[in-house]
Length: 288
Ligand code: 13P
Image 1 (tube, helix red, strand yellow):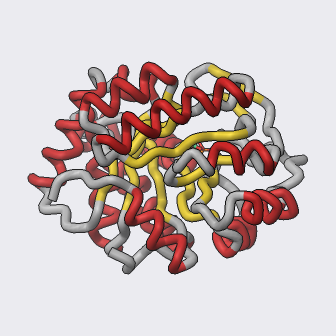
Image 2: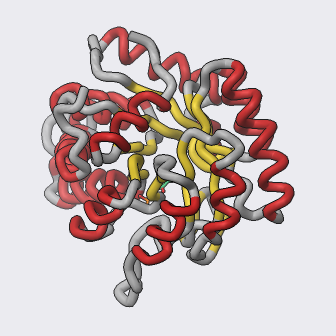
Image 3: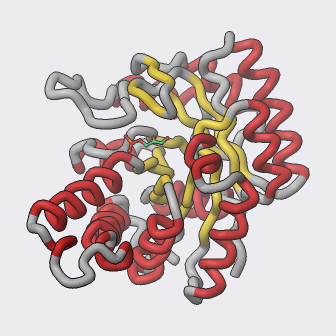
């Protein structure tokens, strides 16, 4: 099976009150680990790249080919969507052309008028090719690809204006932050989440910055209509931790422990274990 649009899997998750895990990938190993975890747990998945990560891997076409080829060579049978995360206007267009099955256009830093105008264009281009679209209202805090923004609470009326354009799922700031959550983080703002849910008439919502949010908060968010949860930092942290332990234990110096296939294995195993744990936590395991 080749990559599929995310519309159906996210709508099913929305009806069934669970969330599709959307894991950011960084390279071949990361992608293999995510695919292994979702196949073993029977989880529909979105694999996503930032524009920076796609560039790092050699470009959008390389990513499309890599994901499709891995699905084929690993015998993956669960639905897999390939999604652009926080796309610019140009990036979203390029990914639609390159064969991504889903794109996010993040116009949250534009005025609402310009965000609406550009979102409308991307939605039309994407839908003409059967590609699903996520748009964003209200910046998500934290730093991603070198861009830092403070967490915002999205305006429900602006959310409605973008949702009404026919977007497939909507990202809205509800106090969530990319990266590690600070000690004094106030938590997700459920009052605002409920207001947005009412305003957009039950469209699926996306929770960015999913790493490190306490389980009770993610499940409450899912019960209120969040149907896609983004995870990047958490897989990076477990990978780095396991790799550091391997090197600190001097294992790279023993025998051929420096062989990348050995050196990267503990980190890869850690990604697989964490991804499986999150598939279960989001209620998506067993849904494929
Ligand atoms: P984290 O890095 O906090 O998991 O956020 C991922 C994300 O929201 C990608 O858009």
